[in-house]
Amino acid sequence: MRNMKPRLLQAFIAFALILGCSAGTIQAQQDPLPPQNPGEANPQKSDSVTPNPAQAPAIAGEATGASSSTPQIRAMNGAGPLPAGRVSPIQLGPIDLQSVDAFQTVIASSSTVQTGTLWQSRTLFRAILVFDQGFKTSRIAVQYQPRITVIDGTANADTGNLNAEWSTAFRITPLLKMSFNNTLNFYSQQQQFDNLSLMADVTTGAFVRSQFLEGNGHFLNDRTQVPVTYQFSPRSRIDATPFFEYYSSSGTTQTVSQSEGYGLSASYGYLLGPNNEIGFQYQVEDTHFSEFLPNTIYQTFSASYSQQLSLTMRFSVSGGMTTAQSLQSTGSSTHRTASGSATLIKSFRDATLAFSFYRGQSMGLQITNGFADRYDAAYERHLSARTTLDVGAGYYREFQSATNTSGIYSSMGLGYRLTEKWSLAAQYGYKNQKNGGANFATGDLHFLSFGVRWEPGRRPERH
Image (cartoon, rainbow, N blue to C red; front, side, top):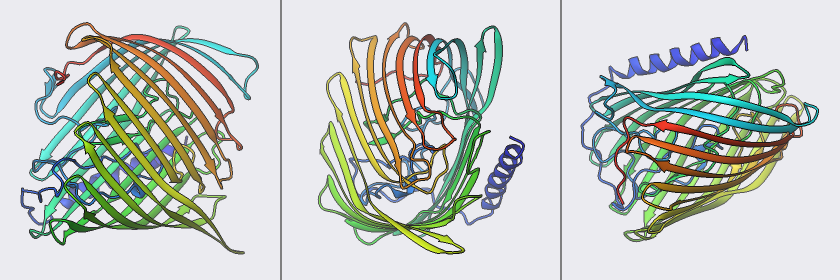
């Protein structure tokens, strides 16, 4: 806790310095290269608390920016892009109020760190405030979510959850382009009783795996990357992305408090047709841990295939091998594992089904040098013009790790739209987590919540 504030301040200072230094770079042209495959948009990065997004397969035929000169940025609690411009009637320049929630939650938990079942009733108030500013081919957005939780008549303020992202694009030649991206995530508490399920966007094909394991303390992640793309032909291109990533996690039982890693990912992609493509990827990363864990060099070789089967169905799959070489004073040790991913999105007349699988390097709220498997499925259906049903389930497990943490979740929710801006929501969720170390408790959690949401900047849905 004492070391967290200086690290957070250092991350913000570094973020500001990067932004200031980049202002003096060469003037970029405003029109990005057109995508090879107009049927798909740029795949969004996963949440920072999910496994390393740099290991996801690169898609050859997709654009690396938005359709306009301003880069796309993902919304904080969704898989779709953050709207730009005048988005809310409650807006002052680049600052707008996105939503306000008030929920009543009943929680029943049992774990190895307590006796019997603990019942709690909580009232939660939260809001999402957004600062979003574009500068020609650059864009900076800060999405901030303050919370107030009332437990047994005592109010607890949680004002530290935020996501900040800056992206700028440069068109150097008609065939060569480069961008600069920095993403900062900070969670002042690692407890979450909503947004459990996999989030998917049918339009872009983006997936976001929400974090569902729970521990104590804070979590910070900052990632800087410089993607460079060269278009060999209308069908093929090569991408090279140097990156630097920093993690910090604090808690009374936290074993490893921080890690930092730098590396390079490179890929070659080739369009087989208008709607399908293949790719080959290589990534190397040198990760340094604060204590207890040795420095580790990760290398991943993989191949990928992606296809849009129809206007309502798309999938992608990748597979390969990851090698982790741990360097110690007494020598080195090497571990290997198969790695890969698979995603599927299918939209129906009144419903959407999404599935995602990931196997690779684990880096989340618990900092470890091991690997992880992650499965998620989500289903959403419009029962009527005003009523929606959503169901989700997921599984996570670490292996070749010092802790080998695992967990499952399931959730079901109902939403009813009172007006265009007001809605009611109810959700039931269940979590179970097991941990071989001291960072997360082993136990079960049931929760039931009901509340109201006001979204002043919400735009009408298109069917």
